[in-house]
Length: 556
Ligand SMILES: [Zn+2]
Image 1 (tube, rainbow, N blue to C red):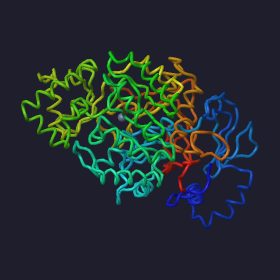
Image 2 (image 1 turned 90 degrees about the vertical axis):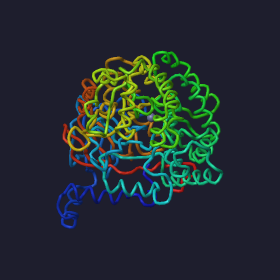
Image 3 (image 1 turned 30 degrees about the vertical axis):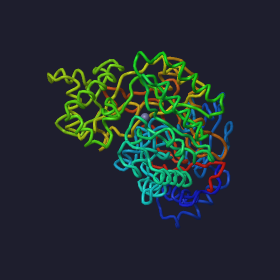
Image 4 (image 1 turned 180 degrees about the horizontal axis):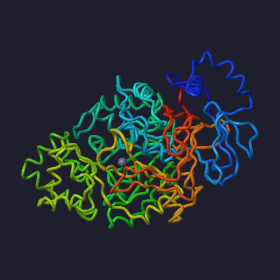
């Protein structure tokens, strides 16, 4: 619940003052007296009337009103008598806690466009970023969680943002891009950076073990870096070392890290890539079940798409990327090394069924723009090029920075992962808008469609899971995992993060050929008690930085 805020954070009083200013649009001194008098004790800022309310805990819905005052839920009950300064008619609609996206890249474009349109219009009110080993702070001096928090507060995004600390970012800051063990002194510095970030409010530690330089960490190093999570019981969230042929070994490694550090485990975007690996679903889940039986607090998240998104370099072996981009390109120039890289890359492409299952998502070189949105196999054939050579050419011309989608997952497996008792929903998506500077490339549609896709395609059409279960896995469950204690639930005193949607029509519209489409069926999105989106109109940017509140030893 509310409690005192950590130092440096904005206070509830600050927020109220700003809210009043914004609502009245007149100087606060002139408005304060009469405003308070007129409102009276029983009135609310906002009342959502007549909706079918899910509290986020997974139980049955209730037909009640929900009132919000000073950014928090101030009343819940049938036909509340007190009026709101603003009222929302939710008859026939579902009222849910705002969605909490536990694995998001939605902060990447906030500086260019703080509206985070593709995020907020899905009903997501809180994003957890710093995923896949990469955070925008490392814990080094001059790049701390608090520095990042101050910066983001200035930007004023439409959604709340919490962040893990990325262990790849930490390694990059201390060890650099090289594939070598950290020295004892480096390891001590890295552990101190993790400690500092957690003490300032980071909500977990993440790895991206298919990405450099994070991939160069050994299990021992990861255990040491995750040990600070133990006292707070915050999660080690991992994009594992492998998600196809070595998937089960990668799950074993993740469990070994959590066991060694005695911290909770969050397997990020669990999937089985490549048709020959689809049957590993049951073994994947059995390993997590066994880990839990052995006392490890293990969970996973999943996104509802058959394609993943990553860098095109991910189709190339990690050893070839040791030392960074320049070193990678140099190896491609050496005939013997290049032949070995080619052999291993083609093996990786074979797992996902060939180059026509690879779609180019983003380039930076204007001359290659026609590749965006196209399957690499078809694009190369049209140019009369071998697809592998075409891929290498793209990397060379684009400073190694090329985004790709890989069509490699089974929708039946997604049904089971979404329905699973240890699962929760994530988007893994970016934030963008259909207008303005962030409309570029051909991003994964998950950035605009994840939550409505779960509610429409997987709940309503495929009946993979119930609406109450899906909402629980988008709200209270992820909020609990990262200790956002006042989020993800609708109850007295909880944060006023709410989404109002039509369960009979809610659906994603973004797809792989046109991701720049907002979902339908989501009427109102409220963040910190302020209406951010209503009837398709973006009205406000009420988001703020959220700090994890750990019961164990968090000094705040
Ligand atoms: Zn990832």
